[in-house]
Length: 593
Ligand code: PEP
Ligand code: MG
Image (cartoon, rainbow, N blue to C red):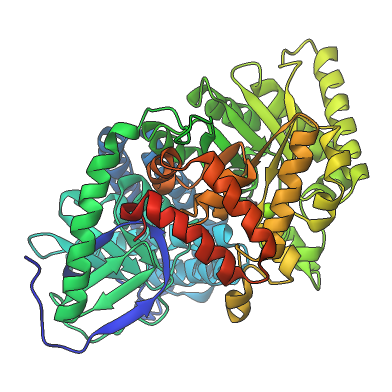
């Protein structure tokens, strides 16, 4: 029974990054990086400060290695790999040289010098538009907190590190931010959920929450400071909602949902490794999207039929040191081997829009979403492009890889990209390096002009994958990352449905298959529309895999085709949603939360 409290209910809206509902007593963890006392030292103390720093580095390194070992045995090497980055930051010579320079020339204590150098890096990373790079500030903050604590300990201060929750029993963690080591260092048997003021769906913490199946909400912005630990908090990871002191009515409503969710999840378990078919036996491939190889274990254990979209730019942007051909090959090979026998669709870099290279900040574009993005950038940098193509080709010798080009708006771009692919193949042949000679090539359809020339594109590729996130944005002229116009971002807009219909029909006219890899592929209310339009593949978020498999198994193709015929008469998104929901409710009411 969930306890209730007669206090004012506060609802906070953030981004749900890991689905599920949790409720329990609140606990605040993870103190912010605190500014140490601004101490001036004497010249003769410089050497002592240098020794203190060295000792703190040794202690910090030992702690990180111990944590890495602990996580590696509990969760596997993927989760513990985050600490490799921490060790690199700890030993980064530009940070350490700068710290020592401040100690020597400005006579500041090493605590203050380390704090000020780290803080500067953290602040500048937090200003970067790209959410993944912005999150790297968390790693530097994590290392800085640990090192400063060791400096204090070296000076005899054994104070609480604020990193681990202190209350017994299970709880919901609330934090300004949770660093990766906060998250992996937690006793997961007693954590029911977490909520943070900062963070994004691409943060390490969000990724780990998903792989641990802990409901989580990030980007809450304004969490009240003053409510006591132990107050009841509810985390709704489905809707990105955090409710502090939920009223008895809210708790009752959610208790029903939690019970319902439990029953549904138990019921879905046997579907993990089943084939995906509609009620009348039509095969639909159900694959999953990934941004990092750390997500592979999770999707494979859920029975994903391969990876339908590997967004390679995340790996590329986050690990600049691994951009060379060997490392890229090794990365793609891992995905291909792990997804055997289904394989992976590797999308070439889709940099641009909101995913920017740091060097692009020097010369910002007025409209990055309409600018130098995706295939445009790759075609303008043929050497870099061929390097990625060679890496993908080389990896294709070790497993099933399909290749896909993003952001195509013209036929010439597709031809240009394929010409680069042929050159990359020639280069490998010349060097005697093996690859899959029959590698399939697909076009991402995510720009209206590509839809309108789909018949031409279809003649020159092996498959289409609809990038609905962008297709909605460009069809309706609604910036996908702008909160102010979010109500106009309508996946069920009749114009969007018409674009998708046209794309699927063009693919089928030319004997190729067509999938959807944008977020709408995971939308259970619109699944009847995708079946009715004849979509062949859906690449979904891991948490929706089993639900979607069940939903599809209850849908009948003929009923769904009647639905999509009837949609031609509608002019508004609400009408489309309503008509589709009617069928979805009839077929799988228990899945519609
Ligand atoms: C899309 O646009 O739907 C898509 C899958 O690509 P991204 O979200 O990476 O732009
Ligand atoms: Mg896109």
